[in-house]
Length: 552
Image: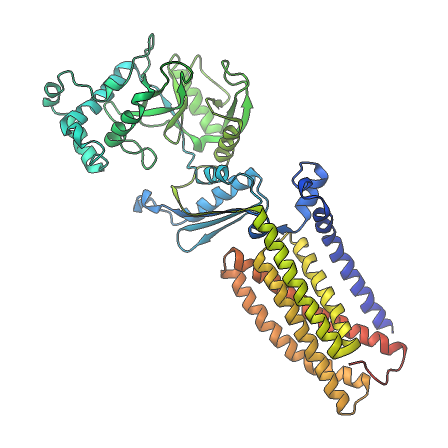
């Protein structure tokens, strides 16, 4: 009898512990749907402790990217580019605030990203796919700007304007254009022809290497510059005369005037300071005197970066220092004095969200190379709700059929099996909550399969007990023999399924992992409830009174 008390105490303790972990899930999903995303500390705590719903159940974004290894020369590849890209993306997504994202490698160079519950998929795609290369480049003087623009003019004239847009995307052709532009004959051919520089206007009282392109000329100027120096979205721009690169500014100026347009900057080709030297990046306001309410990003440099920045600003007082993000000039403030302390800022951003996202990608670091979108899907929350309802309906129908069958066919013993099944599901959901797991639609399929396997284990036991009773054994003897003989079969069948689910979890992708997770937990709970819980009930009943006939 004392042994039974110990077993009952153990069962109660187990159920109490698992119930404790299930409680946050019950409380969280008991809240109205509109209150679950609140930033209230209590709600946030419940959200963190509760079992989460997967992408297919609550909606969100499903993205597949391919890491472009062709951008990295073979002699510079480290072999871990995909893993590094996953780490950078994970850091960005974590800071963005997506709950329970799934980010994993697929094949040799693909990354699968699932962002459940995401409200703004387009913004997330921009955040994930952004290279986020940050450079600090000095702005050159007006003479160096003119020399660089003249090289572009020469390249265009020597090859003929008609070739532009048709063949000038070729890297080899662009290189030959620049080489030909160095010839002495180029000066005589030009003879006042300025197909590129003629698209720009000088900025009055401006000695720095910056020119203004009216809005109506921007598209043409972009195509010419791209043809000669390369596409900045795909490669580093090729330097022109005097080791100069020409890069566009990020903002349109004078949009409300009669002559809106964009700035083009002549910059040093080599950066002394890069985003690798950024220790922290935070959203800040009041960084622009002209726009005190505009959001920007305040940068804190590491020790080495602070030393470089101090030297760079001290040696170039009076010049402009361009802050360049992904080959686009964000801002180019004038260096008024030597700047100590390793603090800088990025201004000229379009919105608070852009400032926040830029801070995230700079803190997380740049991707080792470009990633190319291969698949993008958005699952709506309505579809997710439908999936939940269908999954619950399927589970309830399956369980109802099982209950009816077990009670009709096995009577009270069948009802005891149903109780074990309920405890099995209780342990399964409690374990998912304990592990902060994610329930997916394939996971619900795993639960339905678990219900079937739980019944299968109980059927094996009950049939064995029936057989022993037919052979003339007492109820106690039949139960002892039935459990003893069925145990090996139950363990064997569940162990083989458990091994299969472990393999699925180890090598499968997101949906398959969800199925494998619920199946693994369900199998372990199944063996516990079928072998331990039901046997405990039988032993307890027989310890109190002599049973001559079993309702089976």
